[in-house]
Image (tube, rainbow, N blue to C red; front, side):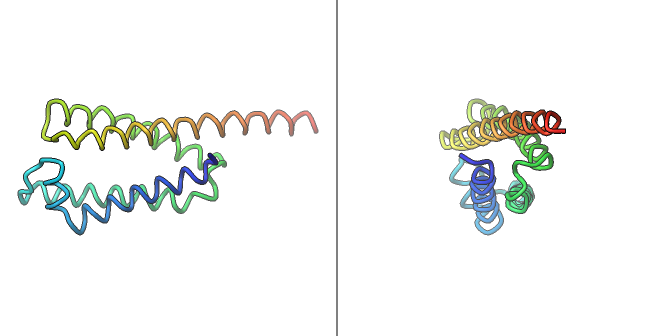
Length: 137
């Protein structure tokens, strides 16, 4: 899979969840087993804004996914999603999530591994390209 396609997939997932958290906050929280009290609803909307920003970031950088800037975005998201795996796992095993919390674990794990792969794959190709350019000079 090309890096650009992975950036687009992340955009669709992040923006989709962002809109759900912004528009239907209470029902989304209830699906995950979290009581939609006013404080939780407010924080979930802030979470939605963060997801919206991530989705827009990967959407607007999709054509630059193989550049050094795209690799930096991929590394940042790999680390962020890695922390998300730990947090979602804790929330599912010991915290407020019900069994559907495994969806959050899976999304964070798959996206984190995917962005780590994109970051290292494009880094390796970029280094080979730099070596080939140096040899040509």
